[in-house]
Length: 432
Image (cartoon, rainbow, N blue to C red; front, side, top):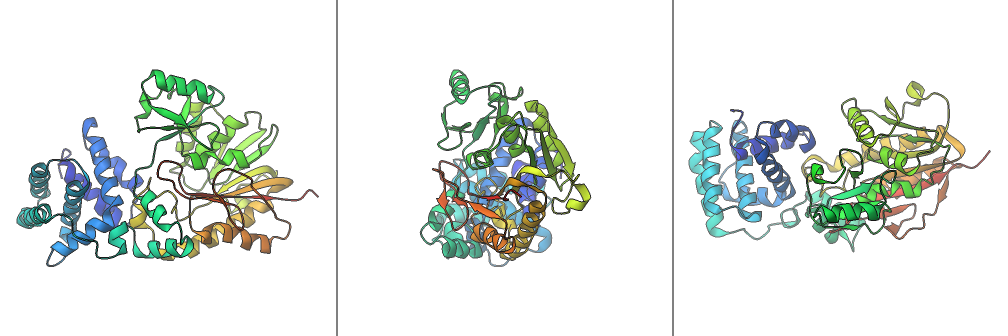
């Protein structure tokens, strides 16, 4: 396809890549570069929106087609999903959606399918959205996820799926080394950006509507970072103090590493490790912009014999790999990428990381276990299993206004106009 291929055609290719297992954060950035700057936000909105409503749109599209397209024409299925998303959820003029989708089909060298595309979309426009055939379509989530949420959160599952289907607010963390929160709120007000202080995170600000980061006062100079309120709370449970040696064990993209350094500039050392060689430079970029320093290591945190220097840590933040079921509204492709069968292997990784980190925690030290999941299987149950294995692990009660008390730790559920879903548990190792 040509570099300036139609917007919808590029969106269809991105969605096909997601269906084949790539995340939006992997396949969208190179596709954005194929478009002029003014069209890039539209491409992002089409891809995110279609993923957000994929299960509902796909159910409707399948119902409108006599038989599935052949695999080599599968991209046209996604082209029609993009058009359906616009018909059902955008303000785009109907005639523009129909005409431009047919043109995109032609530009993709699929002229033999233009009649089908035209016919399906015209009937969709004429007849309106059908009634949902099942819960997956009604709530636009995979069936297994709805069942799991319903089982784990019988009183909250509908609120969770509703929150997942909204667009997440843009939340900032003020760099306390540069500005107080009130000072930065005034700077935003002066810049005509509507914002308010977050309810729980002490340095958080939530914007009324998202803006490009270069519109934020002093962003390039390190005044603020973009970080959800729930993720910012890590510094409130770590009990940071000057002179501590601190480890951020699964650090990329570095938001929590930077939050730790801003909260505790007199730390003796902050070590940030991540397994991904591709994601680690992002941590360095964030540190550089904020004028902060941490020791970065590319390593598998669990393989401590390969990277640990033998000096124990006073504080460890262990934000483990997880299902990311608490951040679906920010990453709607999770609904397409995640499988129910992923959860058990992830739990084994989580337990293994906890056991490894415990070995390198100083007696008297504190470990904070964190996930961006709402599944108890990855959260309080992991902590309970670990405490049974590790008899010297002391589970601390976290008194807080945020989240809810679980059998171990505290769980935050995603809020429509607030924080993401997140889990924290605090463990301490007794003094010798």
